[in-house]
Length: 96
Image (cartoon, rainbow, N blue to C red; front, side, top):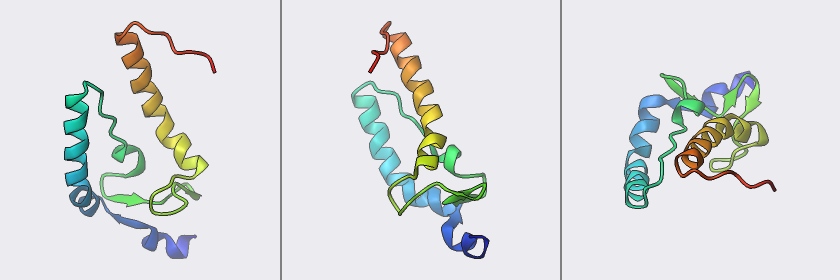
């Protein structure tokens, strides 16, 4: 894994440049539908590098899908924003 670590990462600057347009589109949708925008880049990337690997665990199983570990990394900020929104709407989450 360590030998291929450099192949599984890109610079944060390149990531930000590549994601700029689709983030603008998502922000527009967020504003149009009054939904909170959840930014996950800081969960996946450091200030310098975005990597598919964290602490010897893969975050992605391919270029577009998270592993179970990757899903657990991003689920915390998503759950926080969803709970905050439910509180604002004075709604309680339903039990499954």
